[in-house]
Image (cartoon, rainbow, N blue to C red; front, top):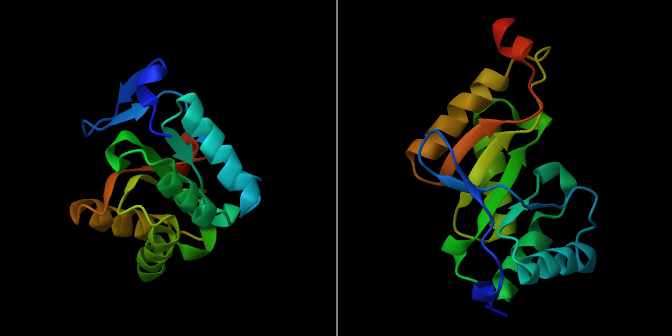
Length: 157
């Protein structure tokens, strides 16, 4: 399928650490594991999408990984985002959860790893962030960030 040259380039945004992320991507929330998510990712990649956004809680990381492998596209042409789920905010849990996601995705590394929700009432997202900093320092993920946080999440810590 490797026909990326026939599709117009998607504009990029440069993150604070210099990593470029496509401005447009496919989110696979509610796409069922197996054929449904694999077909969605296949079609998106054939159309020219290069960013695929999934999350541990979506339960479809393995299907995303299969579709990415089957595409024949070089890994460095793709941008894979996944997210840490709420139950894994403790430091060691976050590291383990990342390993599980990476194994399911089977893509060598993750381009962007996000804390999916802050859960300030638990007070552990700062532990999760420290684990993510370790993953970044170890070059297992190209960028880290947060999702669904409000400005008050950080200021109320």
